[in-house]
Length: 103
Image (cartoon, rainbow, N blue to C red; front, top):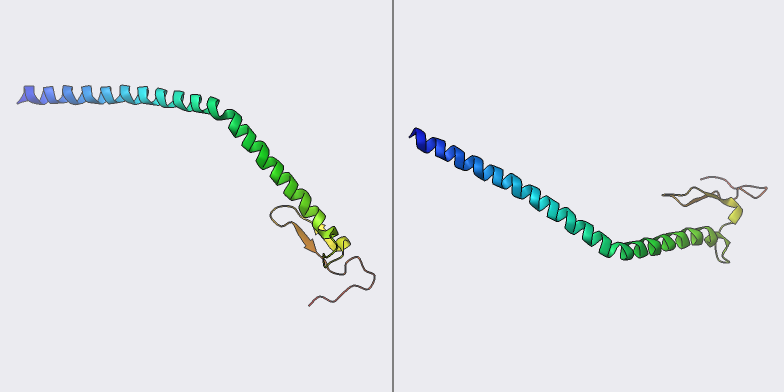
């Protein structure tokens, strides 16, 4: 009984060491595959980042031009820019000499 228990312990320890070794091997292979993928896709990732940046920049520029469009219902001088997440606040009548009542 004692020999069987000892053999079982040795067998379990061998399995544990094998799994630890394999885990390290799998981790190294995984990191290598990620590195290869990253090198392969790096140009696409950079192009995508440039496109997204350009879209964001053009969107922010358009936000600032909207108040100067012909059919914008408020005076552009009444606008105060805040940025993110609220783009602007309009103080209707702020730039006029008479002002308006707040309701």
